[in-house]
Picture 1 (cartoon, rainbow, N blue to C red):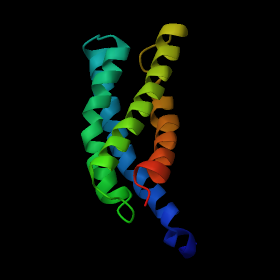
Picture 2 (cartoon, rainbow, N blue to C red):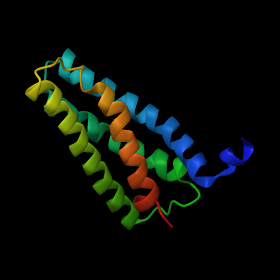
Picture 3 (spheres, rainbow, N blue to C red):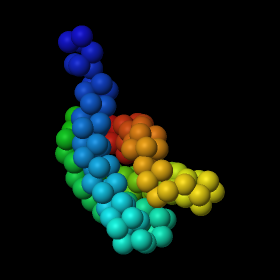
Picture 4 (cartoon, rainbow, N blue to C red):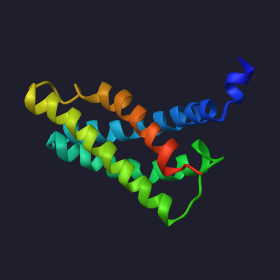
Length: 132
């Protein structure tokens, strides 16, 4: 078991999960405030919540989640922005399918936003954004 936790990829995944859970929870709270509290369009609420989590996510992931391999430079920032744009598009897909296509309540896309998108983001961040 000790060897498993000494593996760099496993350690990064654990740190990414911890940090990502916080960033995702922060973004979901912003989404719910806008979509359910302020009755904003769910896609607009998703855009606002994504932007709110963007800076927090880069800061935490570059300094902690991928600290062994992260190089904080303009190129990694651009790659992070692109990866975050893809995550935004994926979250928008969940919101659109759930609220527009299936006419479900505004909270319905949240499980996919909390689990499917972060797994995709980890893969992009580990093997592209913060790769050596």
